[in-house]
Image (cartoon, rainbow, N blue to C red):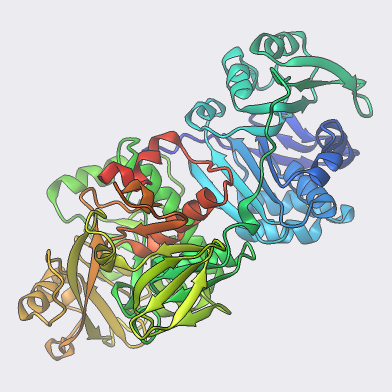
Length: 604
């Protein structure tokens, strides 16, 4: 994997306004930029009227730039939207501005009633590395998908937009945004009756859009720009079905399993104001594999553009940001990644040459004596999560039914299901998602899960490690000090035994590199441990799907989410979000190359 993004090279001056040195063009007109963008994109595409009539609306954009178009669209959406409607805003950007640069630009918006939206947006802006970044704004039920990649990566996605905003930089300054191949992709990614607009009126742009299939016209411009381009994808007939939002059709939703997967599903539902509740046979939250003190959140970067590397980076970006927003990521200086095998030294050197931001990955020059002359990587944005706090904050203000051991589910004529426990207690739901780890095998042994037990051990912090806010990964993992202890582990066994194993304790302790082990006294290694059973898969990647995917299983509105293995605190929030999007018929804006790593069918 390489980070092939370009540097934005922002300039703000009284003479040029907000300017890109890379493209040698302005982001927007200094005097009338906001009103010009509002006219060219919002009014020209008749969005005030369209927003009032739709339940699901998708906008796509080439060139996110300063985010001005997004803020103006979000502001209009809040004024015009129907109740319970959802907006998906997809934007491609190959030279993204950094958060520091965006803060500078957004100060110019404060006189246009955009300051509040700008602050919310800036708090969620991702790092500038090549990936698909999924961002949710509860205010207005808005999903922003920032695809930091080349514009032609559009061909890797299957969504269709109702409206397109085409790049504001002129065709002469940014010809890669105005190619015939790209016009064809835009047409394929536009719904019937969908429209687009752009500042330019260049002849070859008009002809290229017409050739791709759009009905193109010139329309009134703004200010010095007398005319702009407006285009529509005319439908072949009148039998176009309006998209409907399933928001009011799936609740109440019962989530079975109170670990990180179940909690992530609750969060994805709750932020959409969908009625839901949580069930577990245990007496409290996170009694299973999610119940360790901490978990590591880091991406598994690959040297090639494999789907495994792509999805790991996307999931990490999504979940790490969420843990931080929910105040469940303890203060940390990141992660030191040590080679567990000789060939990983070569991999580390290659990764360092792939242009990733220093916050994501850099040479291991973290300033502690024990790391001198040791080949390693420093991943500053990686770190631990407080498991219990994270799960509690994900399910905050949600009804939780502990000690509810589900024995059967009965369908009713009213569309609801009776969920019955072993004492005859009944809960009712329209939709059910099983997220109870390896115990899903009791539901159907065809569910593609492999139970794996694992033991972590805890050692006391020492005088030398108590203030060391750094984590180490070396095949095993040792955390920074958390509540007085470091967590080490974990062992792996293909079984469901949860008894303590002396051999696992010895293995965990002996795995600590010698230079780290020297920071403790021998009597610090007391025997504190925790054993749990994780649910993995044959390709070590999670899955979601409907129980109808399993042969002869008639299970309307019953779904599963599982297979997190040891990476639940990276993958579960991301996979849960995608599953809820799927159930609700929201646009699933993901790279086609990673789709095969989502669904249960690949494992059956």
